[in-house]
Length: 107
Image (cartoon, rainbow, N blue to C red):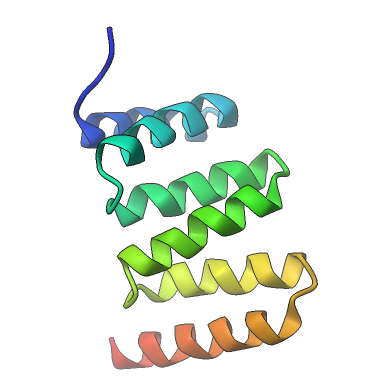
């Protein structure tokens, strides 16, 4: 059976993530964003799953997409900062950290 509701796939992926089935979570999250490319929370969850699998490039790409979908979410910018830092991209990490701090202060 193929699921066609991105929210159901997101919830399924989160369940797999919690059980540390990161590859299974990636599958569900990928299906969800295929159905709804602007579902920012799924892009962010996908970034964390890729990070757990050690694929920092895919994690960064998913997190960048999450920032496009949810530009005012300070957690997205915090995640971007961490990923940039892990990749040694310090100026980008500092920039995202500043954006996250500004957004958090506003809320």
